[in-house]
Length: 217
Image 1 (cartoon, one colour):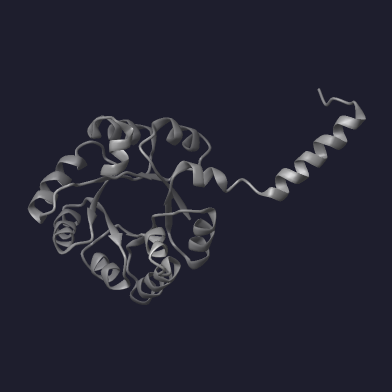
Image 2 (image 1 turned 90 degrees about the horizontal axis):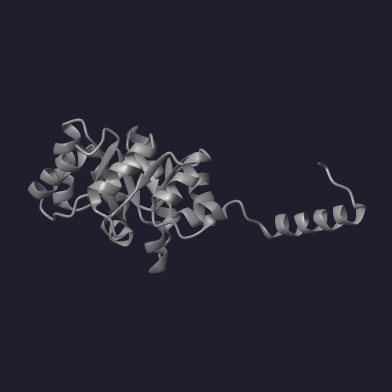
């Protein structure tokens, strides 16, 4: 499974990237706004740091505008993935831009039917939003499973990028089902290393070692 980091915080990206935990980065207008930086400046810096795909999202709502913005964003760096919403206009833009050789991340997917359309329009990645489905008492993981089955049935090459990750369980469940990629905030990725029994065991080891009065170096 590939790990994408869902942030525009370059320091957080650098920390995870140095550990080999970053296969790509996803951003969106909300994330860029939180960074307080110019979209092209921060996106270029991220692209220089990370070898994998970096998703940069269009803000236009019409296909023509998305295509124009997508072409502009693609000039920032060779590893840009253009992010478009899963609307009819977004699918039109995906078809044109993917036909020009650009990578596309089709986002805000909430149904298997939408995912089929995105694959047929040439999406590189489809981003089903797990957490937002859970918020309205629907099963986000069931959507991942449905898309996985359909894509495997027809050998679609579009990769499933599980998004709106809210917990470590979301990551492990998505991995079990067969999502190709997850994108999550840095804090959730780092939380994967934590377990109460690990902490308890380490505390016991430290207490026992202190009793010996010894040092290793």
